[in-house]
Structure formats: structure tokens, C-alpha cells
Image (cartoon, rainbow over all chains, first blue to last red; front, side, top):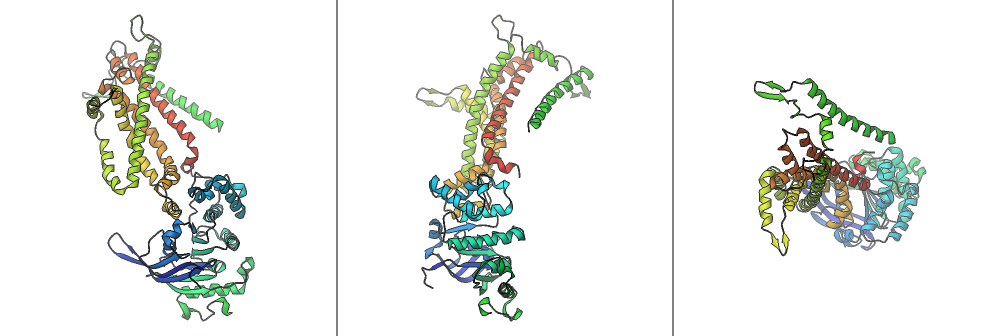
Length: 270
Length: 291
């Protein structure tokens, strides 16, 4: 894979947090990963494995201690300034004084897009997430799932080629969650954006991802990468044997690798 | 909705009448010389000089201020003095809000500024008003710029602002710092600078914190104005009127209460004006009522 086609390359990245008492916490150790354009990659692992930290480094929200990260061939700082990625967090983080429409338009407004183009784009996105009727509502009038949909629409407002998502469905109930996953799959197929998706739900990672990156803590590192090349992603996949195989593969990787399960390492082996 | 509003007005009226009733009840029941334990008076005297009847206070408002032939009727004189003081208090409020906001911005922008300035902000409020009043007056009279002359009413406005800026500075700082990290991260991800983040995130987020502070600042500005009028010796306002009328208390006790009503009126008016301002900012206050 050539460097220009990669959405994100991560090479030998370290991250050390200094605690207030002068101690050091090794959050990430020698992490290397490449995410291709249009690829959906999930980061999964127990708490403290550094999956959110890794995403924050890619987003240039925290600086890496060592190693190199490039986003579309640029430094992370340049990529952030060029608005090469959209981002969504576990909390929807909508501004309560703005309507749904104004929240979706926020990044466009900050970057000086004129009112008509903003409205056009927010109309498109409202239709995409099925909240046309709620355009003039305020966030406190929405359910948790609706808020999260607005946050995702906001992350897509500038048509980024890369989406960074930190457990965006973590606070939702299982029903809403599956529904949102279906919608995200559809949105990604439409936009063709690469996604780095942080989660600690195994079925979620398997259902959404082209590859699942399994991480382990102390220090945070990548222990396994599982390829899942499903031919299609729809409701039927959740009942498919291939899906369960994927779940089993990720689970055994999470619980200590090969000895836990002799089963296939990825569905392409089935 | 409408009935709730009518009810709250009704209860407001009941509250005022209740205080009046208590006043008269106490006056009727308690002994003239009050209740004393040893040599300490624990309950006030109830003579007509100490506690005039409510109706005497009200009817006194419709008599002339003095026996002089050209004297204004009392309520009109009080109203004029109240308007004068309200004007100064409003100016003090505006000055206080501006300086409070600027201080809060300074402290939010630079952490060092917060550690350097905040203790002084808190300390400033421990200095008694009557101590700074003559200082402000003296500094002011040293200002000569062209034909500009420092007037006493300016000193009063400055002192009012000295009391008004404190709640604004403290609450605005809290408000500006209130956005959660997820929000500031989001703005950082948008490559938004300090100014954009301030206008689109921090200022709107600080409105729920500011509203009570603005009300408090209004009350402080009124108190500051009335007290500073006395300390500076500025005539024409409620402050001086209270002192002047107090001198006639033994002969005309009901008159003493007229400027106090005036002060209450200013307080109510200023609180009302700030509440009106808050209505205009309604959409930023959704967070105040968790939905």
C-alpha cells in the first residue's frame, strides 16, 4: 500500500503521561498501524489499553511522546488545521443553546462557510440521519440516540475522508445501538470515509469493521489485528455464522491469544 | 402557565401584606419600651417614633416635604431622588459588569493571571466602603484632562462599580471555565482559536452563571450608591435623603421611612431590569432547567 493511499500511518508511537507526583504512566508503547483510505478499523481492548489515547494522538488532541503519525501524508497538526478528519465522542457534546441544525452547522460556521451552503449541507445531513422534523429542536428535547445521530452528522459536515469516533454509542441501550450501527454502516458506504472507531463491545467492532485492532494494557500496545472481510453488512450478518466466528476470534485475542481458542484467526480462513 | 403567574403575583402581594400585618401586630402587642434583658434591648421599642404606623408612613408620602410654601409633595421628592440614585447605580453596574468581565477573561486566558489576580479580587471586597470613598474622591479630583472635571457623582458611580464587579468577575470566570473537556477538544479539533472558542463556546456557556451574578451586581450597585452618596457627601440622591430625614425623626418619624421605600423601589427596579435582560438571553439558559 503506497503512502499516499493510506489515510493514517502510525509508526512506533509511544505515549507517556506524567502524573502530578512525578511518576510516569506508559499509555502506549511502540504502536504501529496503517489505516487505508475508506477502511473501517476498530480499536478494542480493556480500559487503560490506550485505545482512546491512540485516537486522540491521531486527532492531535494530545502530542505523542515518540514515533510518528501521519494523516493523509501530513503531520497530525497540519491534518487538524486542514480539517481532514471529523470527530465524535462518547458524549454527544451538542451545544445546548443551539438547535439541531445549528449544531450540525457549527464546524461549517467556524470555518466561514456561507449561510446558504451551510443550510444545503445541513439539509442533506438531517435527511441522512432522519431527523428532518427535529431541525429546530434543541438538544434537551432529543433522546440519547437522536443526540448521538446529530453528533455524527456534525462530524460528517465537512465531508472528511477520515472519521475518528471514541465510543460514540457507548452510552446507548442495545436496541438503539444496533440501529445506530446499521446507520453508520450505510453512512460510511455512502461517504467512503475511513474510520477509526474506539469501542469495547466485541459484536460492535466485528459488525462494523474491516479490521479489528486488539489492544492490551500496561503498557498499551497492539496484540493482534483481525481481518474481517464480510461481503455485505446488513441485519442478516448479525445472525450469520461468519459473524460469530469473527466474534470468537476477537474474544480469544482479547483473552490472551492463541491458547484460548484454536479456532480460525479471521473469517477469511473459513 | 397563566394561573401559575397569577398565583406567584398573588403570593408576592400576600408576602408584603404579611410583613405589614406583622409590623402592626408587634406594635400592638409588645410593650412601648421593647423587651430588655438586663440592659440589652432584645426586641425593639414600639413607640410611634421607633415604629410609626404603616398608614402614617403612607399618608405622610402625600404631604409636602417641609412646611415651606413651595415644598414638593414628599413622594415626588423621593421619586426624584430615587431616579437620581438609580441613574448612578446603573452607571456603576455597567462599569462593574465590564470590569468584572474583563478580569474574568484575563483570568481565563492566562492561568498565571488567575493566581495573581483572584486573591486581590477577593481581598478587594474586605475593604470597607467608607474607607475607600474619600480615596476615590481624592484621586478623582486629581484628574484634569482638558475641560474634563471630576464630579462627585462620578466617585459614587466608581464606588458602586467597585461593589458590582466582584460577583461578575467570580461567576464569569466559573462560567467561562464551565465547558467540559469534550467541548474544548471539539473546538480544538476544528482548529478554532481562542477568540472563536470564546465567542461560540465559552461566552454562551457562561450565561447561566452570569445571570444570578448580574442580579447580585445590581443589588450591590444600589447599596454602593446609597452608602457612597453618604460617604462622599453627594446631595440629590436617596443616600443623603435618608440622612437628612433621619435628623427630623423625633418630630416627623413617618418621614424617615419615605427614602427607605425609595431605596426598596430602586432595588426592585434594577432587579427587574436585569431579569428582563435575562429573558432576552433565554436560549442560552436552557441548561438552567434540566429537561
